[in-house]
Length: 499
Image (cartoon, helix red, strand yellow):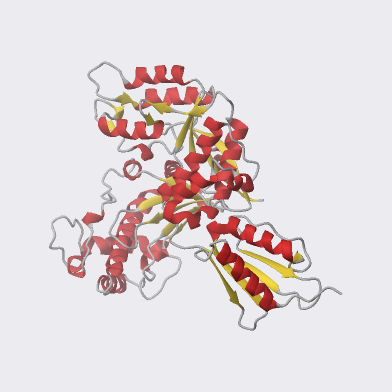
């Protein structure tokens, strides 16, 4: 009869292996309060070490997965892995539990990871058939760990995104003829950003209208090229024109990028996070004469499908307000909760983790004024009070508005509130509510108060003119999704939805 395995023996062996392999800094052994389970808590980036530890145990003991199932495989995304040891009672249970340290990786870190993976596909002809292939590739995974550096424990959250992004790239663009595109000494995104700053890309030379920055025109994170020399020659004619005009013409540049994308010579790719257990899709945008998104147009939205959820203007310290397009798309108006700032217009696709993008502030300001040239909203937080004293009676000359303005805005917007409360019964109550936020000890109260006044002003100007204008709100949605003739042709990789 097989000898029963005792829990104390397993604990002793685990501690020995952890010490021998020098895993002490990333793993430790603990028992559950009732001594029923042995826990091995390990840093999630050390999952290969835990795989090695388990393989060593399997050389000594009979081990099955919990519930008499096969032993699971360790991966970078493993949260918990349970096994039972021995053939006879008591069959001790060992639960390997991963943990993370540090904060979530900043946007620049995981975007660098996306770019690196696609460079491996385009330049090295790598093909990953699973997340495990990325984890086990000696050229790829160690570099990702270095890119994430002190945020390496966040890497596991992004591996599925990287897998889906490269899968679509491989399907559509991988071949020996495709490479990441550089112009001069910089990658194309960096070149564009510097060119716009140093020389300018103009929509109107005579009026001096030009792009303020790269991201308000082009959402692409990386460019892939098939015939670099020929593409570069065409771009030289646009960027190095010899005339009195200093920079390039936006219309001419956009037409050329459309031609290159349609002929599969150059493609700019916009990358977004993909949730686990979901698939990504790749869609080319801004290549048709209509410059419309069929996913939006096919919905045939009417004004009755567009909802304005703006009650957070008068509720708690919450600052986000929403414009919803049926159950499919939305725009979130929000700003920082920790410092004074302007409102951002973030578009989103329901059922997808990725945002569609931010609508450029200058473009929204222009849109507001098409039918309302007297519109005063500029989305400039310096024009609104930061203290209760300036809210009651402005002493700072940069503050453009007074109690008379706030009362007018409130009385006009109030009819769009759907959750009336004590703060929204009349302007006097709203005034006391905003004043109370300004007087909170933490600066976050004043930040929320200012953001609410800005949102109130925006909806006063927009709903006052466009409450029944479906096209206005759809155009604002398109601005955030970078769809239209003023935006660059590009391919967007984003989440399709739950499988």
